[in-house]
Image 1 (cartoon, rainbow, N blue to C red):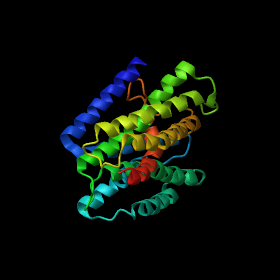
Image 2 (cartoon, one colour; image 1 turned 120 degrees about the vertical axis):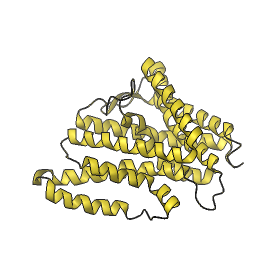
Image 3 (tube, one colour; image 1 turned 30 degrees about the vertical axis):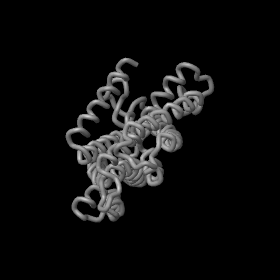
Image 4 (cartoon, helix red, strand yellow; image 1 turned 135 degrees about the vertical axis):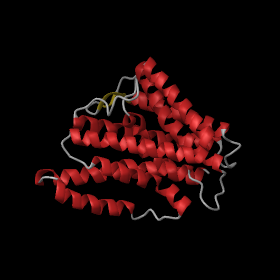
Length: 277
C-alpha cells in the first residue's frame, strides 16, 4: 500500500509539473505517451494469450490515432481515414506474415487494441485540445481533462479503501475477486466529491454552468464506467494468465494497470462535458 501511495503522489506531481510548464501541448504529449505504452502492454497481453498481434506498427498507428484531434487542429490533416487505413495494412500483413492458424487472432487483436485503447483515449485529447472559435480558454480545457482523470482514478482509491473497510459482497468474483459492491459505491461517492472539488477549484477557468453540484452528478456515470473499464482489463489479464500488465510502476503494476479506468471513462466524460461546459 505504501508503494502504491508513493507512486500515485509522484505521478500526480509529475502530471502537474508537465501541465504547468507545457500546458495543453504537454497534456496531449502525456496522453499520447500513455496511449502508446498502454497499447504496448495490451499487445503483450494478447501475445501471451496466443493471438500474435502486430505490436510495433500497432503502437505507431495507435499514437497517431490518439493524437489525431491535435494533429488536425494544428496542421489541418484529416484524421478520419487512419483506422480504416490501418485495417487495410494489417489485413495485408496478416495474410503475408502470420500462419493460417494465427491470422484471425492477429488481425482481431491488433485492431481491437487500436479501437479499445488508442481510439477511446483519443477523447482525452479531444477534451484538452483547443479548437477554433472555442468558448473555453486553453486553461479551462486542462481543468476539464484533470476533472475526468481525477474522477476516474479517485474512484479506484475510494473503492479500494471502502472495500477494505466494509466490503462484504463480491461484485465480479470470477474476474476480480477483491472488488465488492460496497467498494464500488464508495468509489463512486468519492469520485462525486472529487468532481465537485475540482470544479470548485477550477471555477475561474470554467463557465458558470459548470457548478460543483453538476460536476458531482456528472462524475457518477464516469466513475461507474471506470469500474467497468477496470474489470475489462482484469478479463484481458485473466485470458493471458498474468496478474499485472507490467511492472514499471511500484505498487501499481504496468501502465495499463494505471490507465485501465480511463479508457471507457474518456468517451463518456467527453460527451457529458459537452453539456457540463
